[in-house]
Image (cartoon, rainbow, N blue to C red; front, side, top):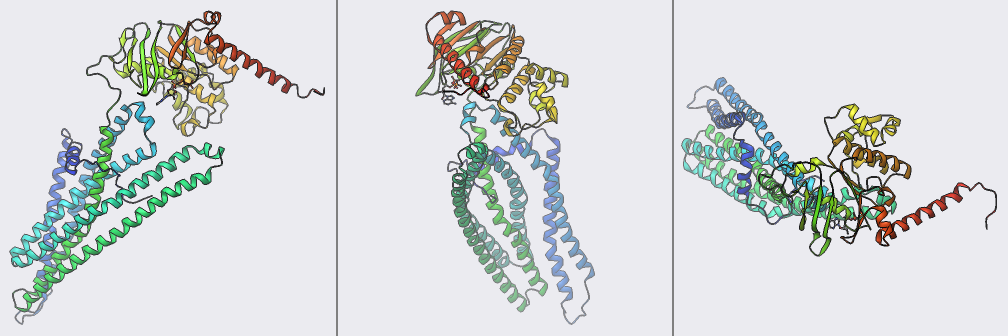
Length: 617
Ligand code: ATP
């Protein structure tokens, strides 16, 4: 899906504001090299235009030398012809030097802005990232940075030089001939520019639709491919294909309209140029007939006009590209303007870790005001102790871990670590303290070693192997032909759920946090491996404050305290024994799970005896 792209956004920042906002990225106040390059580039621009102006003059002189004047003998004006050639060469040469010198300036600006947007996206809250559509977002960034390149390219070295050239040529024509020639040239230029601007404005709507439909199609394709397995589960290839084709069809219609409107623009430009050229040549022709001009003058006027029309042809294109670039940049800047939901307070201090006590104090939370998720949740995880949170699916357990990690701020109440409200300290210091093994582990599309080392990128190989051993993954990795350098595939999908979870545990161990947060960290493992990992987790998290979210109650019976959450509220609290003694939710859950375990065992036993020849009733 190629073609020029304009985001479909009606509320756009005015062009001039975008350019003002871009300027600091381009000029880079403290970068002396940039200033030097700017000066050289503009000097080259001026020299190249001066050389361009000389070309028709040498051409005219050559022609006049060759025309029989007053019966004199024609001589070949070797000097003039060589000067003509040199002027042409210099015009192009200076132009090329200018582009080369300026490339560093524009590329540095592109890099600075790209990095700014990337950093900003990482600062935005989880809510933003859950709402966004990755396909559309990456297209917006891609188009934005490309837009900056185009803008610099066209604005600085196409529009500006062409305008300068038009004015200089107007002046030269006026000086060398009379104002008629200058006026014809300037009027043609003005008509051409006005027509181009008006038609281009009108055309933008087609490009905008093209862009919106392109976004739509790309998002659909990316989403569909990300869900590759689900598509197969339901045999829905045909359905996906039809959905994608619908999006492509809309793009196709918009692209055709765009192409037809472009043809109209090009045709109109050609008409204006041809009329201007004919009038000026007729004027010059009559001038020659009346002995006001020489043949050389006739040729030079023609050469000036043609010379101007060449950049003018690209002026139309450049204007379109600039317009499009500005819209794309504006959309990228809008990403920069998305406010960060969770922010450090000005001059927030780092969290001062002393013992690792966590307190949830009357915590309320909702993702959406119409649906409260946590209601007046209060509990304490004493320093060095283990607290488990259990409850039905959707009760709000993982939400508690997200709040502790400050992916969201509470909507009521507060969370304290060692007596400090986590909203008053820096997010970096808070997150450094906590090691999370999340419910759904997503890995980077890199090697196992890279993914484990992510917990602490400076770790040595020995440290990585030690963490992998504690997480019970080392032996598995050793059985792989490529060992630690095995690539795990997109989002880690080449590993099984249990293997991914163990890699996630290893990388959290490597982080060496003070507080552990296990959100169903071993749910994807079989009972035996789970038991082994539980043992090593227990060893590692000994004397560390630990919050465990668990479904399988058998994994948390040793916790110092168990909190039972139901529909966002704490309904029971106590130790495993204490809660069992009490005839409540926990006891009911425990009995249910025990019963299920018994049924499973009973199911498995007859299967394992399936070779038994005794006929069954
Ligand atoms: P499970 O045991 O199934 O993982 P949980 O107790 O961990 O469940 P949470 O993930 O905390 O449940 O979710 C609590 C509720 O909040 C659920 O009903 C869920 O649909 C809702 N929820 C979770 N994340 C969001 C979100 N980003 N936006 C809106 N609602 C959300």
